[in-house]
Amino acid sequence: MNVLEKAKAVIDGFDFNEEHIAKFNESAGTELSSESLKDYLKKWLLYYLIPELTAYDSEEEVPLGTTKLYGLPHLPDSMEFPEDMIFAGQFNLAEIKPHDIFNEVPKDSGIYYFFVDVNGVESEVFFYDGPVDDLKIREYPNGDEYESSKILNLTGKTEELYLQSEIIGWWIGAEEEYDAYDLATIIGADVLKRLEGLLQKEAGSFTLYDHLGSLPDEYFFGKPRYYQGEDGDTPDFYPGFFGFEPPWQEDCFLNLSVWQDKWSKKYFGDIEITC
Picture 1 (spheres, rainbow, N blue to C red):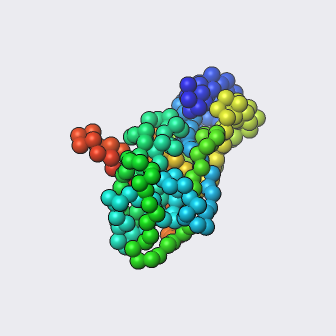
Picture 2 (cartoon, one colour):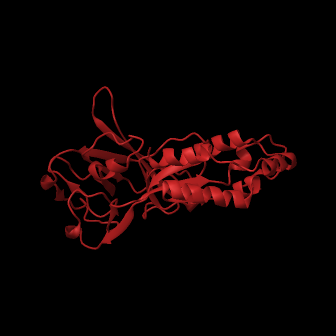
Picture 3 (cartoon, rainbow, N blue to C red):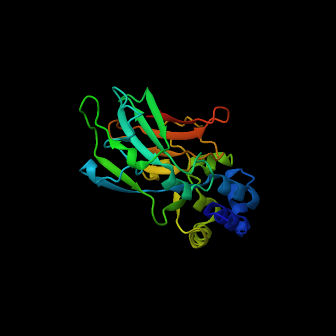
């Protein structure tokens, strides 16, 4: 069982305070049960891979082909730096795949390169799967450089589980002031604390957060972050590939995705921006 499956098993076997839930139902006009509550918790329990960022002042100090944001791309001779684009980052699948519990990463090896224009409207994504020794540091065509390299270190135990609590009032159809009904109100603070302890014991790293803004600024997998609710706050789980806040665009978030086309067998990527 992976870390997410272990956590869901904890929720399935957890005994909630039925009397406390019954009192909440009476006051809020809801028909919440232990089973429907467990369904909610399992749908909003999300897995993230949180990298440790290390900044480098000199690009020559950065290992060729490593997973990183910003700086200069490490490209083979067959690829050109796109004109009028900002280098967002490169992602080495061999470093990411061991943490991919959803099997979302399309390949065990290769490097994705993401470029975006300063307005986040246009983007270019390249994929390379060849010898790392053939990579070279490539300068910006116009001589610019927007940010120094930040390596995304994925070694060690970096997987984390997050559970969103504030939206539960909306989800269960509470009559009044639904956004004030968080998990502690519904199941009791002592019960929630006991559940958190069990999840941390079984799953390792677990955090109960109030909203998506509480998440780290850079992460793999999990739920894509939208500042304007483009996904409608649905509890349906779908993993992203990588999300981060770009330094050149304030109050915006970039969601990256990667995939292999089943017909052509070619590898593709996409950039989605939300501000």
